[in-house]
Length: 324
Image (tube, rainbow, N blue to C red; front, top):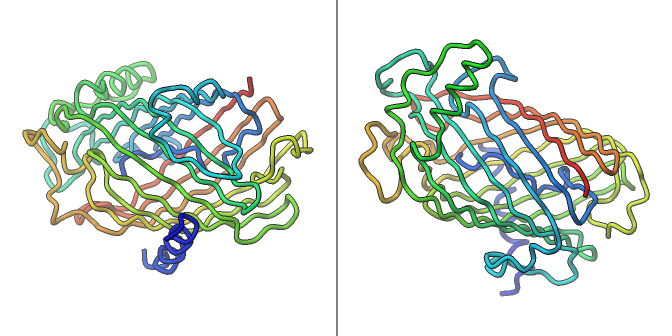
């Protein structure tokens, strides 16, 4: 079976299920997050404060550096290759924090989300096929979940600086364990209208000690933008501005931020496997302005409940990129 045939069947299958319905939350591989440069730095900050909440996915911090020289980075050799492609190579640092619905309790809130902190080093590549209008991205995440990820210290200090109540329950968080995860994301153009509208089918999988899941759905861009599937030398528009939206279904096998690490089974509180929601629906939407050298984005996200006693959750994020 060819790679092209496999991914086509994979996306069609997932799209067919997407109307029925997380650990690594920040992901910049999508076409609507394209920076038209071979080398750039990007920062993203997520927080549910943007939706007037302080629970579940509490915050995410991401630093990302892309440069052609990273092709020689040792872990890059483990990433996927693609013909007819215009690849970029990068590394990133991701920090995530999760809390229950109340941070003011100093005891375990049974039936609620566990406290959990994660820190990972991400090695990734993204290959855009300019002929068949598709993008294949892959990444390796290596890090740790647990107190060593400094989730307690980061959230406590931010709350002190901003004059908000400090969290009291981090001592109950998921215990230290290794993160080693591999991910693949696939995106294929379905419909396009000359730099003003783009519709894609998307599919993805995650496999490792942090999360096991497959996902599928659609996304769109609408506004004024360069074709993200075209070579960068053909990007003629100096200013881009557009809205985007994305709808995906996630089919969950394992989530360490809820169930604890794969090897360390001594966390004081976790969500049992029988209480995990095996299918969740996520919707993301946002606005992007790109001035060639400067990329700015604001987004909002919605996720259905991840465990039986949980509830739906929303958060927002800002994304700033600089071409180098």
